[in-house]
Image 1 (cartoon, rainbow, N blue to C red):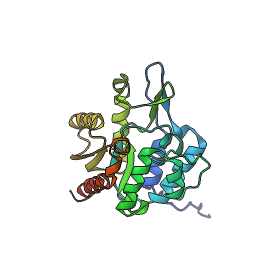
Image 2 (tube, rainbow, N blue to C red):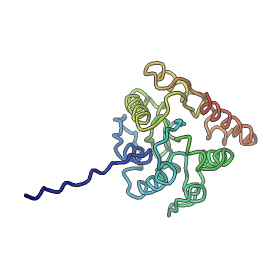
Image 3 (cartoon, rainbow, N blue to C red):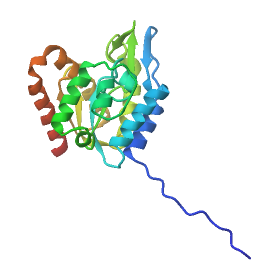
Image 4 (tube, rainbow, N blue to C red):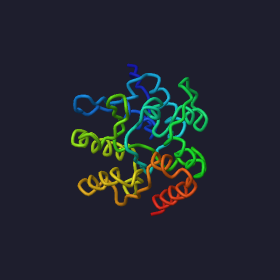
Length: 237
């Protein structure tokens, strides 16, 4: 009697890229007050494609990353590209992901990619860091960007923020160090949440890129150096 053939067992390989893509495409938007719109680029097939290309190019491994946490996506950066702090120009020219979006600069993206180049370029930077945000989805009101902590929004989105941080730690974010972008309210919120939930052992705070570009533009090299110092501290402890 012939023995039935069994299919060979194939190991399923999970990479940081695949876990991050699953995280983004399964985000459940928080309930927000009337008049506020949630901006979720991952509902758009084209933006999902850009995000997938980026993740597959720079995160196709199982290495842990230091989370670098901004505020939330804006309309002209991750809100259309699906890649945090990345406008269409940086997506194409710095990351090599061709796109048909309007070639328009976004201030935060300009600073971030100047810093990334000073770090050693996208491959060196993204090998060690994962750019993200306390709220990985953005918000608008009256057609303008809204920060998650403005307009009475914070109580509504806090559970979403906590859940998102937990999920990013589970997908490969490091728990020893994190870098937070924004030395004001963004740091205050993360510190309070960290005191309660114990996400990270230590948080390094730097000024937000938009603040730098709007109010400290003549001192860009100084602030790039501050970012590099925070990156070094997060990597070496």
